[in-house]
Length: 303
Image 1 (spheres, one colour):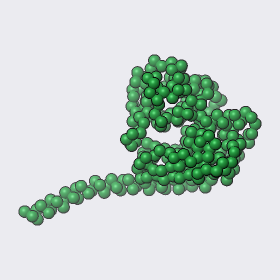
Image 2 (tube, rainbow, N blue to C red):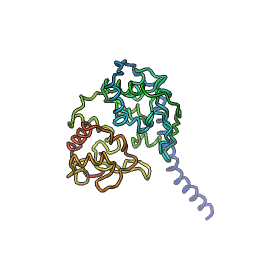
Image 3 (cartoon, one colour):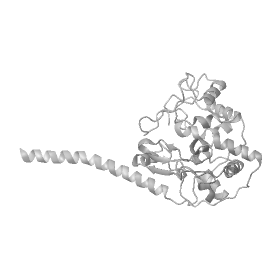
Image 4 (cartoon, one colour):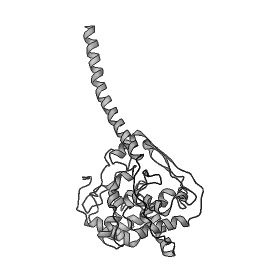
């Protein structure tokens, strides 16, 4: 009897251990894939763009940094960095200094342009978390305006930044739940540029690029696959009854400007509320026109 029990116990351990070993191998494979991707050197030629430093360019650059680019949201008013990004079990991130006293002092305008549009740093590797993958559509004049504004800022000392990602964070990046590895998500051979800003759905489709990252390509929202517990669940942005059906442009503007839903509940902190409220009238109207043109989808129909 005892030999039989020992044999059964042995096979039970094997039966339990095999799935665990398989899961460990699965995780290690994706962690290795992340590490290899984030150390890859991208051979993207530097392209000079005309330098702008006129008042209109500085004003446009400031607007982009405070709204579509979300630069100020992350790096702070003077871009000095130092803010701790709440990553929880995914890692530890301290936003770096992006003022003229920080990393950009070593960048040429062409290198900054490549960083903004392709998400590639001076050494050819990917930037992480910076939303270059959703801003790569900016036309040359907007990229030049942002660079001009950044160069015009005071030279500030600040935190050089910290970026530590756990195995969970790396795994979620590989499953597209959280876009940490930015350059991998950009088609560098066909980085498009938007038409001139206009209050229509065509331009709104570009403004909405960042929305589709969390709310899904369908804009129907729902839980982000693989996201850790506690992460915000994106709402439905389509004109479906579980989304924005019955809403007016004024309703939409009120939410954007107040940072609160129609029922008075604040939008989740995961939403870039400060950047949204800095969108101008053309951008808000264009975004609304695009959302209204989307096919109605029930909440959670992400695919």
